[in-house]
Image (cartoon, rainbow, N blue to C red; front, top):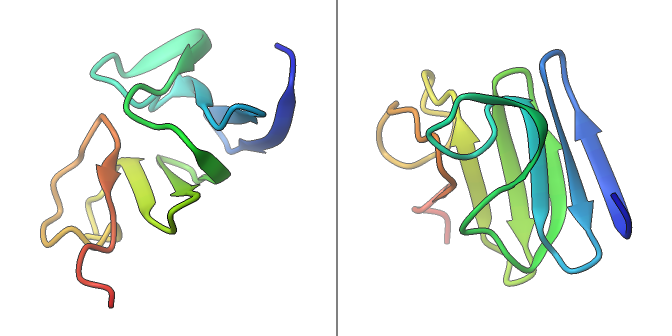
Length: 98
């Protein structure tokens, strides 16, 4: 992969951010209904990303407009979306922050 500006990794999940603001994920929790991949997959629905953070079983991305997007395990409600459902595709997180 070329033009990588950031990388984040955990126990079973890795991601990179490219210079165009797109996230590429592989391992477990790749940001789509397919739960895992052995090769980098573009996380659909994310663009203009400026920062990424990969945790053990969930991922977050900061968009240039200041919004935070999350996908993966939300069992403790840590995404701040009002429930503890697990979104496999990115959802806007912390929806009640002002």
